[in-house]
Image 1 (cartoon, rainbow, N blue to C red):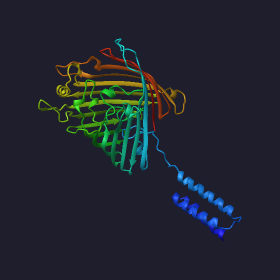
Image 2 (cartoon, rainbow, N blue to C red):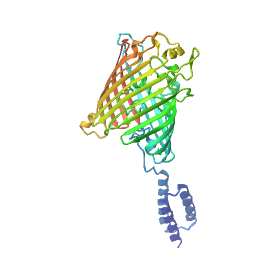
Image 3 (spheres, rainbow, N blue to C red):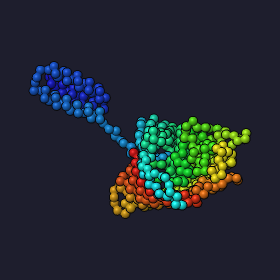
Image 4 (spheres, helix red, strand yellow):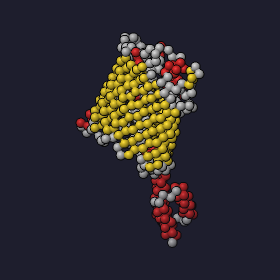
Length: 443
């Protein structure tokens, strides 16, 4: 009678564990049962009881180590973000975690195009280490962020930065409100800057000097997609004109660090996918950049107006993408005065550039599973001083043409190795060519 009672209790416990009872509760019951058995007199029935205990113990251990039924992988883009950055949108609820990294080896030529010997040292850099963390509270509210660690160590010239951190409020599955530190939705790389999304070892110079990737500011706005079209529009703090240089507006980014907000800006983007794998669109940024600065008692407006047109296409093994951008800045003479810029060091009243790149995945000619090997070429031109104010000079080094060619290998879609050569030309004959090897990953 006692044996039948104990076996019945064991069966009930095993059945209850199938309904995912708390592991600690099961352990408490198991200890109590073991104490009762220890008090019993030795009998042949104990072997069966011990077998049942072992079964129960195994189920408790499985309950402790049970993995989630669904693991979200970095294999899809959403709401303008790269595959790893948009993982939070695909989890059912709770925490999401992802990231990416880039390592870059740069080998410089010994002299410039004009024959001047250089002192540039070859280098191998842990360029970026990125952690994405997000939290999906429910189907309508989520948080997403990107934390970047640059150059391997903050003690060796690197820094830790928040690249974006925002809350999304989804009014509908295809329409939402976004607020926080947001990525300015311009160009092809600024929002999708993971190393697996573009072909070359280094990002385009156009999307560095003209569109200052990675570009983020504090603000709020709307985003959405409907069928083949998607859009984003934000009001953000504008950038600082008193930090522009002859090399572009990159230094004016405020990055959410005690950002001055005397001047606001409007930025937006519209994309259309006429067929699968093809996207065409445009984006803009417009706002004053003086941030309350004055010259001779007069408030400096320094209005910046920037826009771009872009397109990309993927068809079978072929990849094509291109971008054209222009920017104009008002009150440049006053912005120069804020920094005491003279001669050919003037900020450009007009700047712009364009590039085209193409690649073909040779693995599509023969089945290589997930692996791909893609030779590529890119040509770009830019000028950060297309026009300067009266009384200032253009620096001939500001007008550049860069030719890049190389090959990209992906053993899996989430890891990449790239090797390329870059030829830099400018009107000052100061271009310095280089070899690059890039290693990247996302997860």
